[in-house]
Image (cartoon, rainbow over all chains, first blue to last red; front, side, top):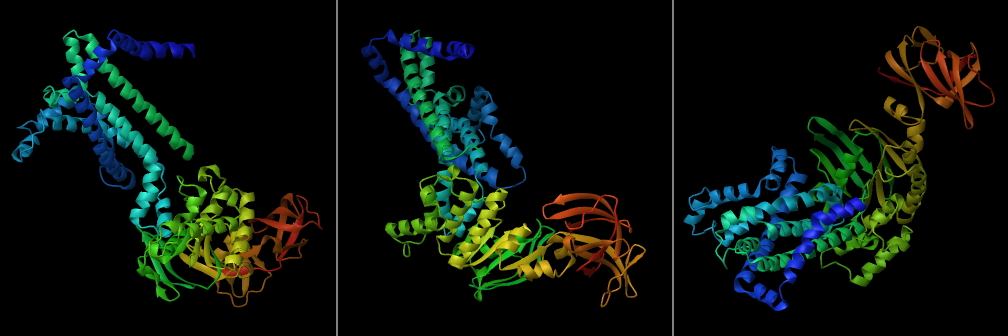
Length: 261
Length: 345
């Protein structure tokens, strides 16, 4: 007990407290000025906005992938199942370099897209793509066990009670998966907000356009403006806490209705 | 509602789950499909429900072609072995589901739905659970809710797939009796699948015994127990002694011993002799068709169960009344009060 708390304090709580203390060196006015500067606001907007959009895309695509992996038996299913974990395992810098090479104007995907007038690498779209890439396993791995547990018989039951396919999905399947889907969404979002390695390669990092908040923190640190960096960090920390808290509540809500078997 | 099934065939790969099944179910009947696992009984039930489709054959409801309709249009209540309740819905909403998904044109108003659900929960005697979630109920309660949910749509036919299979023995017995009286009350044509002979014989009006995708016998519980049509039915229902015999020139041979039993009208060749355990009467040595030595005796409620080594080499178990005390080592004569012989090894 004591050991656990001590360890937890050293590893997590003390650094976080240090972060808050550091930001206390700023007066509320200075704090506000840093946060309300155009560059900071834009960086936060890029980070949170794109992360949320990417998480939503992952929610939809992840659900489809999970459905296929759980409900269908096709050749190579195990391989696809393993591929889902690649974004987990790949060093983020490697992912960033790979995505950049792929989507650069002369890359395999970048070239045809450029011909259509769509530029991905070194734009916010690039950030979006990288965030989708790193977020997908979170949705898939959260929803997968819940869907596996969902007996196909309940769909047959709904059908024989007169429900159409659409009614079955809306009234039976989605509500059963909802807690897991929301948890997956929150995890993918949290990961995308904090993502640094894979994004900075592909982003282009133009201030106010494609500069993410974590990068701005690094920039401020390299300029020795520690207080600025911690102010931005504190905002991100608070938002992350809120997300984790929400995830926890979601899981508790889900468990209160669905028994552990 | 009557159900006619004609020449139904269903294959899963090379496995013939149904191998030419014909069946007619009368209006208001409570029919049991009885058989070991893999006999095709659940497949037959699922095809009638519209959850599976046959390779060939016909299914008619009151003479109309049911195979032209999906599960949704057939208006059939289906109860699953593992309940298949919607776990994110309360008991009340589970039962109301079938009423809420009706097309807008025929959907009842909220008050009517509430009244109907209340009525159904009363019928299954669980109205006090309406705000609970399925996870908070016992197995027996869940199955009764599943039944109420199936009845909500006023089904033309009620189908139950091993409805008590997942429950413990005591609850199972209660629910059996309850199902029979419920059927008496609502009188909808019902079919239930079971591998438990006692359940089938106790609950159903008629029993269909299936094996390997075929129907072995259709009859009343008395028929299938008293006059089994095939060797399989005799062996499957009730506890039987099964002996390999040879029919030759009007005599029945067990090994090299000729049994003093009538062999009129029997087909010569290898056959099987079946006797119920309690139909083997014990007498003094030399008095019966069989001779044997008692190996072991266990008192078994009203009867004593004895393991007897026949002089032909086979060992059988018999149930004898307690009036004549048997002891290990006794040599006894045995005479079957009733027996059946089926041709084929």
